[in-house]
Image (cartoon, rainbow over all chains, first blue to last red):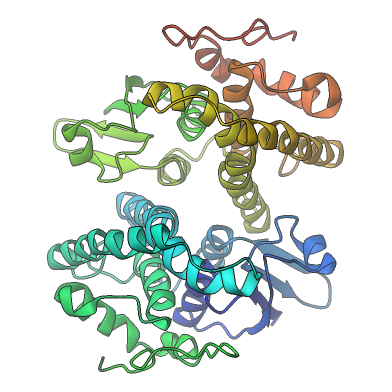
Length: 227
Length: 227
């Protein structure tokens, strides 16, 4: 068995997607904290983007370096196909990938970067106070994303179809990071909250719920499965 | 045989990646021009992101809608695996996907959005003159990306390994759109230019070289294979 090390940041949503995918597949791994806004030279040598996540799989003969949540999750699916997080039907797999991109790029840009980026990462970077225009945009935009999640689960059980998939993990990765700072208006989005309750109670979610950043504790209900 | 319609914008790099992938796999398709900054209601009904590309595959019994370059290219690879644009080895496939993400997100943000975004899309949106700070950043950042392409092809033949892959198509998609406006300093990057010459002379590239935007002709050497 190779040893697996995931270079990540606890509040980075793509890193959270990978942690959830590894957990769902029952793959043991250790984490290493990176600060992607000021990457170590050794880390840049692993992956020139300096971004997280990067998964390093090492055995006696070689070290395999997988850079980025897409590359890591697709590799896991190819090498450990069961349980599948993409499904068997190519059309379903395409829908999963469409939604992963939606959450990891569209929602990240419209919501997560405006809220988590301004309130947490800006502080970690030491680059000043949150911009109120960004915060307002984030608080406004999150409703459309929660509505869309609600609409999907009202029609499909899980986000991309009848089975849990990477689409659920990508959406939960964004929302769990936002929930850490208490910025998800769950009370106004019952279907999305019910879906999140289902995914939050899965064993793979436990490590995320145990995250604690020094000097920045999570808000009250963050780790509460009955929120 | 289903009929294939690709909703795209001619200068959108992810749309170009899909056109190249379809071409390399020998799949016939028609294109429909979209304006993703002001999506038609009918188009939003196809894909709520309003973004390009979207591929619609239709036969008598159903229409399959694939949203986004990742979903489309992975679907093509799963349903028409030959010639492969990902390779057979999971480690190589992960490297292809790492590089696709690098070009389609990192290079897009650091270069393409600063140059093509400011000079072309801002004008198409009707949202003002190019921002000179963005232009300077784009002109500066492109060198690191061309150096990286040069380094990769000096070590590997194609960008992700010994075979042409989606990584090459993703990089060529960004650069060909930038080349349309004459913003690629090829003379200072010989290895990258040699690689681009190889990919530019492939039959799949011809449709890109025939693109002409109304009121915005390409710069002199855009369609010239001996540039």
